[in-house]
Image (cartoon, rainbow over the protein chains, first blue to last red):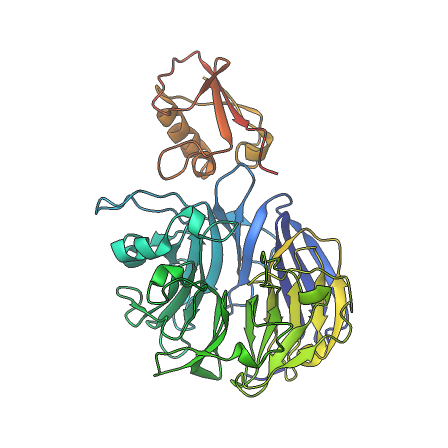
Length: 379
Length: 85
């Protein structure tokens, strides 16, 4: 559907609350709505594209346990989930676990109204069929001995805890699902999550480790191309990759990045209509892994040929002494005719990259640490 | 019995002091959750353990185990630990 939207909304999830930024279709003026849930760690906020008004927000606080809040009126009012994601007691003698936080929210297939998926820390996959009011664990992931082995321990995960993320629903088939685990590889189901196969062939691991061991794989962000769902892009702990199905081997496409920048980072963004175009935002993965913009000069990089070549996009961004970190959920693109990029930094800055990242401008500063940025067009 | 509720949970109870019943802390939290849906899971996880940064004091004494027995005239205080950021 290509009718022009009347407005845009940015959903900004931070370590200390959530904000909505309402913008006009020209993306020239933004009105702030927030904070919502001031003081809560909001790890992700998503809109339901099937109705354009339901929001889900994954929340916890420094003290209180994890939950999900739901708004049916674009954030004017919120109600807590009746049954937030929580692990079942495993029936097969595996150690019981507790959800520390819900990390990732993905709306279900367009044909399945009310369906949502959630990924948690420690790694768990959950599904809701009532619009996020109640959540059911998927035992084929959460309580499978092999998955448990691949998930490792809390010490094997990211500094904020191991995550299940990048939950993808194939727009052609609601039963075709993918997700990533940091750590624990990329996995695919073709039967709505009842059984899974692993997709790690071609992905590299940290030097000295065995790439055939699934637990060593750390995909940071996996995206499916809406215009060609047989194509996946991935930003990994060890490079940028592309996978064209029905192939099963990821190809490292980050080799074409400038050597002084490298191909390490967190977010991966795909073009809404051109499967050859994708963006990354490199981080310094050298030495002790600063995870900041290389040389203190932040930039997005775009490929327009499926990863063979990359171009730097830094017009309008600080040219020096900007030690940004952009997390895996904190960069996205809208679907307007010339898509704009949006990103949030851990230092609380919100930026727009007009015309595919060609011209960057600040939307907001002084927010808390930004965990996630999503954008939606509202009719 | 009387239960002191921390500020972080007042969005559930609407008050700092509430009444609830139970012969153990488990039962007390079940009753609190019945009266204030959702409250229990913010304090007690699915392993039936107090969350790491939550504390419960019964008559001024710290209690970690939820099978701790209670009397009707006990005073239970749910408290945020000095942590959390």
